[in-house]
Image (cartoon, rainbow over all chains, first blue to last red; front, side):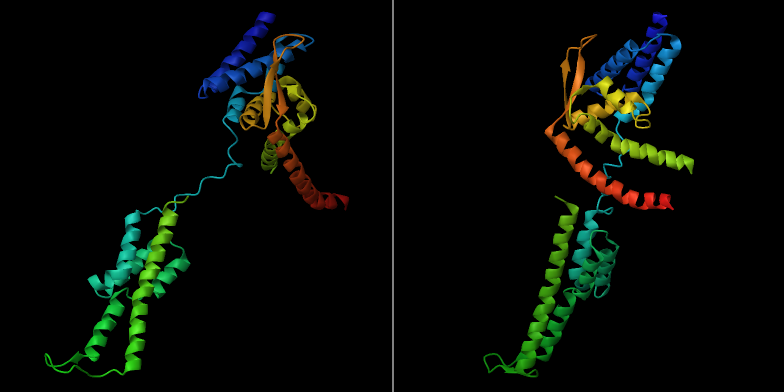
Length: 208
Length: 115
């Protein structure tokens, strides 16, 4: 009878070995060693070593496939999935969005800025708040202040005969100072906002 | 309904089994067969004894238990497992959380029973 028992046990261990084929040899050896030791202990405590007892013993240990599945690890309720990559679109589009926002209006008046806007809002890099910032604080990009600057200089046209006294027409002192501040603000704020968005982008693209 | 309940129980068992193993090792070192029999004494905790060994192997690789070989009075040497400091800390932390969780569930489940 004991040869039949050995046969069943060897068969079981072979199946276990097979189930663990994908594991590193050291882990496979450890598991097979532990389980054959378990079988030996359980077998020694059997009152009657008949085929049915051996089969029951092996059934209690379980299907080798289950043991292999357990060795492969739980179906990961403990380990959360890594977050999906932050951007699905090429990083070049984000750069294009920022460039078009800032100077798109200069390349193609008005439309260029809207292209930048569209690229900004379709990007997954920035949050909605950041997109709003980019929309509201960069109106027209640098095109608007430069446009105002041209108007300003044409209104406040200064001139005079070469070598003669310089005369300026239009625009009082206070008004032009306020206009200058406004124009500078319109130049600085968009650049600052775009710089901020660019920094946010590099943070999102390369998390620590 | 029964199928999902079975799945839930299997999941709860799976999630808590490692702490039962750590608890069994809290006071004394044990070898595999002894551990498995200790768990099997409680009905429903272990459905297939063999799955304890991959668990032990994982606990060892995670540094929660350590093992060494000792001669057996009968038969070949046995691999004995014992808790590490990290294992003890993990067990203590789990005990605290488990009591809180168990009390919260009892609060609802048991009250319903009394009616």
